Image (tube, rainbow, N blue to C red; front, side):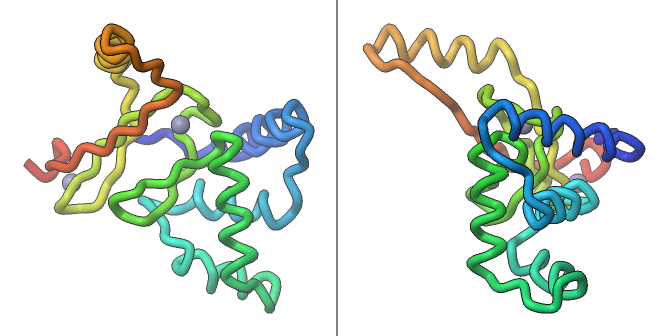
Amino acid sequence: MHHRHGERAAQILEAQRRCQAAGESLTPLRQRVLELLLDAHGPAKAYDLLPLLDHDKGQAKPPTIYRALDFLVRLGLAHRIESLNAFVACDVGACARSTIFLICEKCGAVEEFDAGHALVDLSEAARRDGFAIRRTMIEAQGLCSACQ
Ligand SMILES: [Zn+2]
Ligand SMILES: [Zn+2]
């Protein structure tokens, strides 16, 4: 499902490039939080990440990690899964595009699913209704193929 291993260095480089393009900087803390999300085997809550940062820095505090997570989400490098109150690294490096998450209720696996046309159809239906969608975030709950 995911193919992140071995791509981490490339993803960090891409993240640095994205930050630079946005006139921002990937500070060591922001980079570390992104690395923790890339290493996580599923969605991670801020409080799961906190002890890992503590181990590194001694003094990471919740506001610090929330600020770093907000930053990563704002740049599209990570996504917040509302229904789980958790975060995942973007599966494609960074996306400002609309995203669908498939969330397995049994094993907790989350797949960032590119549903292309489903979202185009949604945009067009909304446009006919006079609404211009800028961004869509859909979270679908169910069972992954391994858990069915
Ligand atoms: Zn993404
Ligand atoms: Zn599953």
